[in-house]
Image 1 (cartoon, helix red, strand yellow):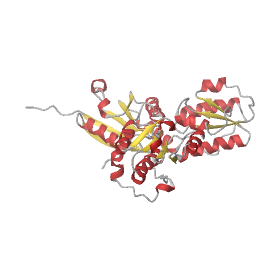
Image 2 (spheres, helix red, strand yellow; image 1 turned 180 degrees about the horizontal axis):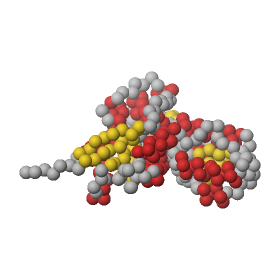
Image 3 (cartoon, rainbow, N blue to C red; image 1 turned 90 degrees about the vertical axis):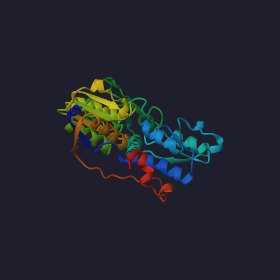
Image 4 (cartoon, rainbow, N blue to C red; image 1 turned 180 degrees about the vertical axis):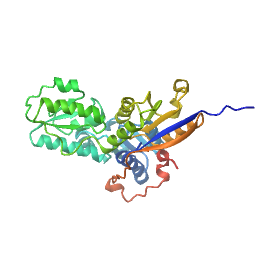
Length: 334
C-alpha cells in the first residue's frame, strides 16, 4: 500500500514570542500564592488574556471573579490577586475597606505608564491616553487619576476631532500593547495639532509588544499563512495578526488551540509563519507545530530578532516560596 508523501512545509517560528516577563510574573504570583496560602486564591479578572492559562490555574485552585464583592465572607482571609493589566485606584481601596489581603500582579511596565500619567497630572497637564476603550489596562490607567483628567484617543480620526480645553497643556501616554506603527500615526497627528504636547519620560509601548511585532514584520513576507497564537480579547495578539498582513503574509489568523485550525480552509501551503502573543503559553505553540507535522513534512526555522532576558520579581510575600519547573509545566511544557 502506497502512502502519499506529506507535502513539504517550512515553518518560520518567530523569536521572541509568547510570554513576556510581566505575564510570566503574574502567573507565577498566582501559582506561588496557591503554594503558600492554599486554595482558593481569588483572582480579579483574567490574570492574563488567555483561556488556557485561566483554566490551568483554575485546576490548581484559583477562582476568577470580576469584582471583589463576589468573594464569599468565609474566604476573605484568602489572598486576592489583581491581574497583570492593572486596576483603578478604587480597587485596592475597596479591598482595604473589605479587609481583604491582596497581591498586585500589575505588570511593572503598566505601573510605569500609571506613574507617567500621574506625573503629567501633577505637573498640571491634561492626560491624553492612546488606547482601546474598555480594555482593562485602559480602565486601570484612567482610574489612577480623578475623573475628567484623562481623554482617551483610539484613532487618527479621534486625534483630528479632539478639542481639549487647554491645547497648550497636554501630556500623552499609551496602552502598552498597541500597534507600534498605528500609534506612531496617532501621536504624529496629535503633535501636529498640539505642538506643545508633552511625551512621557519613556516609551509606553512595552518592549515585548515592540519585539513581537518587529520579528513578525521580518518573517511575514512570502508566508502563505501566518498563525498567531492568542486569545480574541488579547490586544497584543490581535495587533500581531494585523502586522503580519501588512508586512506581506497572504493570510493571517488568530487561534487559541490547534483544534481550532480549519484544515480545509488552510489548504496547500509551503511557508507558514508562527508566533504567539505575550499571554500565550509555549505548550500551545508546540501543539500547533505538531498538528502541522502530522499533515506536512515540516521543517522549523527560527526567525529571531532579539533575545529577551527581562525578569520581574514577584511580590515580597512570595519570594521565599520555591517555584519549580513542575509548577509551571502546565504553560511552559516539561
